[in-house]
Length: 384
Ligand code: USQ
Image (tube, rainbow, N blue to C red; front, side, top):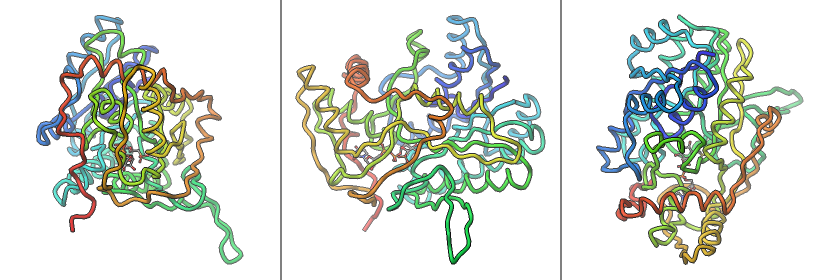
């Protein structure tokens, strides 16, 4: 297949590109390098340096003999998006090209606006360009489990059947997102659903949980094929942060009571899920939603798991409860479904001491690079 990966420079985009390329697909990656610019502006960096995309593509060719075509492109530029869709007419488009951080988006109007403009308008441009040049292509869009929030009922996959005043209908599942970032994904979902219904496009929205991990099979092939790894308070996600904190003897930063519960998956399972979506495309006009995660943990449970795994290595990890900078429930019911990817054949890689130890030992090699100034959260959801 001809597969285009949008956001191919990122934590998940680059490993996805290698994964499909290895299987013999024709892979084109695009990126506007916004994330690299935002990192510079915020004074943050990946724990290890990440060679630029052209360099990684060259190394990939040397190591495997396969091509990954690099096409810098900004989804905010509608003309450029039309052009690239006209040139390549991909069979599948895997869309990661979004500002991914909730705390980043909660730093005031300018950053909330950048997040929603980049994400929502970028995706809207893409939808119009697909309609014009590749209406048969399957759009595999990375959404987030954070679109649903934490309702006091089971979370279905995208839709819920409601009986109301004697009538029944299957409707989009209610959305209660956590941040302006998560809201941008809700807005995307609505726009994509509308275009599937109206123009007959086909799409799968992958509502993904929090991803953790440093390696996939391909990132290990060569030191320059690694992917980025953030542990700071803005771009770092909770389990990756906890593992770095454990390595540098910083107490784990549990926000508030730690009863807030989220879904998780290993980075290798992200690739398997995306592959399952791409190889089992949605029908014409279908807007399909998969909940993409393998396990559910509270933040406090995660901290205890990291503490236990590290004690086996003689690392004595402390767990701190610090005032929660976010507005979120710290104790709640949480029962999301993830049947659809399992039905397609996902065999989950569950969190284990082995996976934590893999992370901890890799992080240990870059221990001296860790910036201790980014452990405590600086972005508050409410400013007064
Ligand atoms: N948390 C802590 N301590 C920390 C960092 C986070 O207790 O040091 C807590 C947060 O309060 C939150 C939970 O851990 O309750 C998850 O926070 P996170 O920063 O790991 O993840 P989140 O902001 O939800 O966003 C991340 C990704 C985003 C993706 C989302 C999936 O950055 O791109 O969409 O996970 S989900 O959480 O399912 O919405």
